[in-house]
Length: 502
Image (tube, rainbow, N blue to C red; front, side, top):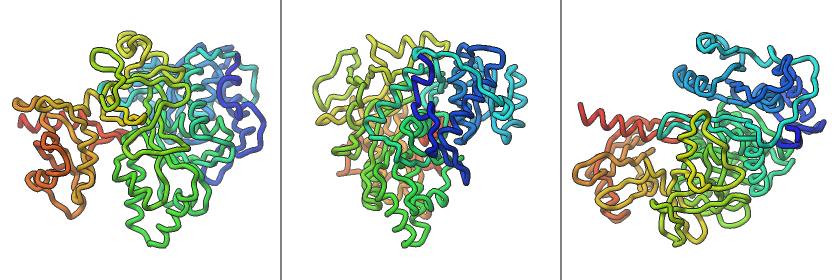
């Protein structure tokens, strides 16, 4: 089986349909396909197969990005896309962990990467350096071959290299093509970081598989994207909750007539999706009121792609991530590894299916520990309510054991976000002699507002059980977040630990 027969059927043909739009430039499927073959030829040089050589690339959403990723795949390598916002120390870890031999980077990044690549004996090149004038016959690649290495977000531990095969990637794409009814008539903007499953699979790869058109943005540019939305360019929109919050904030800063035009543009779309972090119920309701769109929330992670989703056709529930996707097995387990069959009893989500990754790179122990009886252990705790999964949080950071209760930090955060003074909040458990863990709210206040613990406690009474009310309040300017908008709670815990010692 050749790589052309595994993923991306539209990238095998000579279609004149528009695949990518980058600024004022439009690229057809024919053009993109030919460029990928030329790049793959250049990567091979005198070889017939890269034999899973790890090739990293450091660039935002662009024709060069698509050329590099698919070129690595077609030449038999393992694609290692990196976050262009990464610090040098983070890049050092990724490159060393993956044993990268070549780094492909845009011209604007070459100078900043040269010293690091030289120290690690990595060849630093550009796409233009690699492109061959002609294409040669490319190697046959089996579906079981390793194809991509993404790094975990590092919210709970040091990032690990998650290795997916061509079969894995195909399964992750095709389940979403079916579930979300992708077609060649779809047009979608891509502004999310392309080192993460959300941007790579959910948007870019699904779009190219379906023969759709993907508009590429180096970053989230609200005015530019809003103009396209008003013009009716897009019929699908996918983002993290932070993006929807920024849009609502943007609406507050512009003319009401313009807001109406943008909201009408969203209303005309067939689908708006929120993911990568929990979508607060308040935000879900706000977006519906503004645009008429009922956000489709889903659940996934680097190791599985997407596993659970609210339905495209059917009820989409606020605060729930939905039901298992086609081809994905999902089951809750208790702490003794017994399957949970009773609704409203929480347990860890475990996943089976072709969508599940192969291994953590060069880390047999971590791979072995992540599977039990063939199930991948996500570390996320949920309950099933009338067939819909509701995430309570990660067992390590979002489940707080306080006074004999197991509390969901996400549930408490959802209530606190309705407070008129609070802009954003993270709830964590802080070690405490009395409670075991004391529920602690770390809060960023809206401009011109103020909040103290006593007033917060009084406000919470009647809105949540007494044992869920925060025992402590910490005011900060902003919450620390990673590139996908997830709050890095371990850093908050460390901050509070250091404050307690001072």
